[in-house]
Length: 82
Image (cartoon, rainbow, N blue to C red; front, side, top):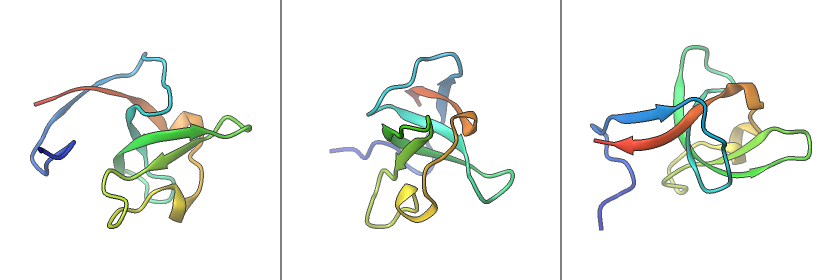
């Protein structure tokens, strides 16, 4: 089985998509200015922030380490990879 994303994959993002749990999203890293990350949206908090989960949870940093990500940090939904 092929991984969800490989290191050299390129992705197409839909910045207008309605985001739901389970979607792959492009987001600005909450603590590293200029760094963008692709993670799975696992849930929304009551405050409207997103809980993000790494695609390889054993080796990934995600909301378990940096907490919920503000909604305005989400740049769009991954709709295609090539």
